[in-house]
Image (tube, rainbow, N blue to C red):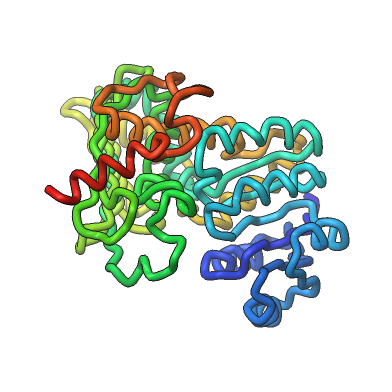
Length: 368
């Protein structure tokens, strides 16, 4: 097992989560540098976590510290340009969500990865708990049967003051509201479990928050395997929950948590007459590790050690981003959107607001 030189770019709240989990990475990572435009915040963060290299410019960090992996913990509007700079310098990238603010920006990664020989991955830590791996193995198999019906709810609460930071709740800085910045973790897991989606019909509105984006969205989704799901993303829900339920032919798989799960947050219910094979199949799976950043970090190091593609890499991250774009496109046009519809020239390829269409639609709904 190799030890990788890691740099953290952006030293806000989520960077502290990365640093704490890197410290628990079983000696697989050595944090050699940190970067932030705010030097006071940078020094405080680096002092707290014992990080020697301290930079206010990403280019200088890449040239001098020469990290193997860069963790991007900056605000969303910075992710894609910083990822490209790192990739072209030959450093692998682990970016916080969303990976980009549009499909057009995200597709710039293809050239950057080829030029620098490095790989891009997005933080989708819910994929990496043991129970998630078990569910992905069993859904669609002989014991659980094919998936039929599902729901995916991210029902969170963010008060007005949450949006006091000027970049929050804006199309230009966050790319959207809870669909892009909050529910993306949960519906990424749904896509991870059910496979490619085929068609989305959606609604989005601004009900209560003083933002330019939506504060709630709801979608009806058909998957390639025939399963039908609902997906709700809300910042208006005082009793916060994050839930996935998948009803297969012979078993119901349920996950209920908030910001991360343990194996105890999963419930498996067998259909009548299928109790023994369902229970046996589930309990035969490893069910020790919960979700979290450290689980994804270790999976990333294992892939690099083996010379394999990074988990949650560019191709699968793009599927999740395309799904978010489809929710917005359907919500603001009133039409179903199929996977593959949003291509260059499509109004929602260059931005989740559809060349301003989303802004005008939400302004109209807010007046109602």
